[in-house]
Image (tube, helix red, strand yellow):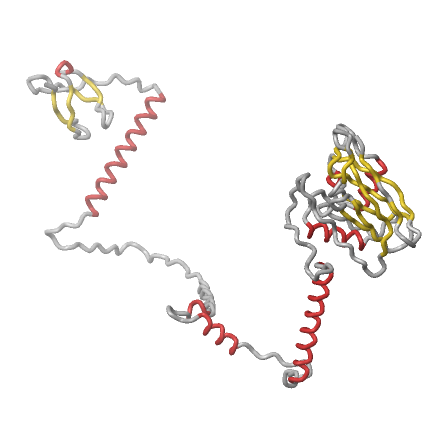
Length: 373
């Protein structure tokens, strides 16, 4: 069991091993030397310190300790004087010998400026804020329209009003223009045959027509300024060496002098294109000064041209394939690039024939061709 005692200097309660009984040690709290009590409780006095008073360092340390002790004693005395006595009356000490206490001169201090308070205006109340549940939005729009300022007319008077006769005339004129454009477009896009029925009865499909089926040729239209200029028959030779009508063969006639820079789409010029796409392609090419036709079941075709000049005639077979690895001739490639947006997709992998033709007017010139192997 340890020896328990208090430090004689700081009164700290300490505990130390019994083997340290009677020895001199330092207090862990205040650091001063103290004698550990003996086992019987007796405490021997501390031995006198052998000091070398000639040691300046030791002298300075002792002076510092003395000053510390003096400060501690003054502080304890001040603390005792500052504590009021609860039992006795308060003692008022007057100092008569003290002279007048000089007062500090007052310094004029400017009063602080009042802080400016900025009040932000309240946001305007919108229709969404004032709209409650169950209010019809159409009623809000009507109220907003009634609140909107009325615009004055340029003359500063009342707004201009049209008389009923003028309004009726404008309406009748617009209706007449619409009806005339509708019937003209219908007559140009769906020509009638001799029986009075529409010729374009083919389904709008871009799939190729089988070899055993024949697609009806494009209708022959005698447009103003266009005259039959070229006619003929196109055949192809089968693997058995038998010539047969090349039904569905395409005949494209292009003016040698290109008019305009617009490129034509190749969709309506492809083999197996729908009748509607073929009709659009033919109309577009006629606007450029040429013509487009598809051979009938007997391989016959007719080309109409608007003016006497020089043309390129391109015959494209439907059944005869082109030799593998054979590319388009450079001259034909340049001609197609002038007219079509994708010339490589126009001919495909079938045989073709390019020639020149000078139309001089008069009866149509015959031009037959046979695609051989």
